Length: 325
Ligand code: DAH
Image 1 (cartoon, rainbow, N blue to C red):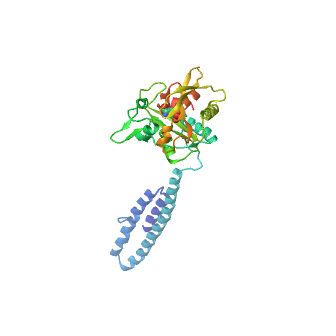
Image 2 (image 1 turned 135 degrees about the horizontal axis):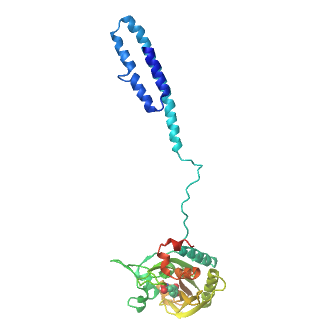
């Protein structure tokens, strides 16, 4: 009978397909109420002699089954590990291709502008989008109550003397306060205006400020440098024109237009010779330095370059538009 039980157990163990089945077999034979366990327990009712003989056999059978189960358990858990390994990452498999990003047309244009100006000796400087009234206006010769402030209606931050800068020009004053001429900088950045939007105006847009100051920097330097810039940016055939303009921080002031493909002129930048009051505001001695400044609309440059007729497209987040660059 013992032998029968043992043979049956060994056979079942051999056939066990997974750990669950194996543990079930263990319980059936060696568990608390297992077949072999019961036999071992019943030994106490036997005579001494019988108990000795049967006890030996039963214990042998027990340890044999125990041992075979152990070996089988190892084998099956190895297989379980292998089965799990199958789910692991196959590092040699080709990966998923995430959709590729691309620079925004404004970023593309900004990079080109920076490269061109750097190649003619200008440094690129960054400034704050949240400005205070002094740098946005006063330091630029636009005192409170001056009607020119109407040109730059903006968004004011409640309760503190801060506003969203209406142009990159405040960086002229900030930079000159910290640096002495001769200097050549450009300042690309985002600006804001509180105004109705249309095809060529938006509440946010990008500008690049330019500033060159030295002992004898003149209008002809300005014209030469801007012409060179526009040629490198649009190509040698570009047509530009200067018109008289008005800005409180330049004297004289002018506007620069570029000719569009469809034949009309688009205003690209405001410019002029830096007003002595601006030099005064930053602490330069009067009439010692002179220079030019300009503020060019990056969006405008991009519109002419890529033949875009509505500025609002830049900020629409419309992928059909953005994917074309
Ligand atoms: N800040 C002016 C604007 O946003 C543009 C401008 C005009 C900048 C003349 C200048 C300048 O540096 O000299 O309308």
